[in-house]
Image 1 (cartoon, helix red, strand yellow):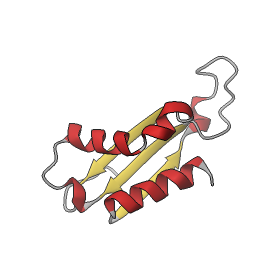
Image 2 (cartoon, rainbow, N blue to C red):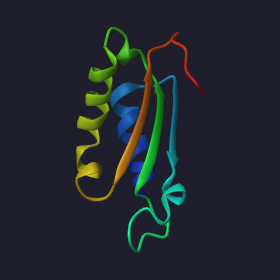
Image 3 (cartoon, rainbow, N blue to C red):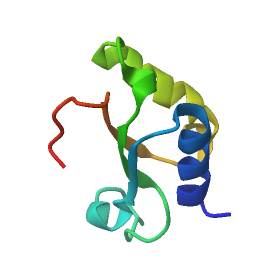
Image 4 (cartoon, one colour):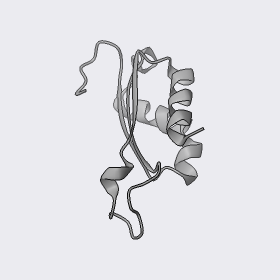
Length: 93
């Protein structure tokens, strides 16, 4: 299973999102680190709308996602941008 698929599965099972997009942005970071050519699964953006985020502030939402994906962040994923929202909240996407 790819890292992207694992992230999507974990987020879906934990938060039952109304909308979810897990975007591999690794190619955008080519050359930022020595010997990194932008291939692979190292940089992701998570866009998620879920009722589980209702009543949570921005920091709590980020912590919830980071805690859930701790295993991926420990070894494989170098960067994770998180754009969480509760249903009915405006999003930029």
